[in-house]
Image (cartoon, rainbow, N blue to C red; front, top):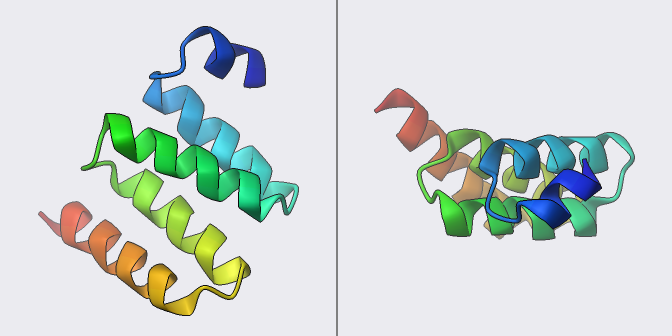
Length: 78
């Protein structure tokens, strides 16, 4: 996945997948960075907002996590 993101840094699906892989590996700082990059490309990506919320929560950034999860739900519910 890292190679795909390096080759196509604005490919949102690859960014989200890599972010999820980092979450699974408990690399929360890296996941935060990757999901933020995905949101720069697509600010309405509810999956990216959710992943960012998870990363923030895992890093004990609870206010940021709350904002991100609210944003994810707002977009998902339309």
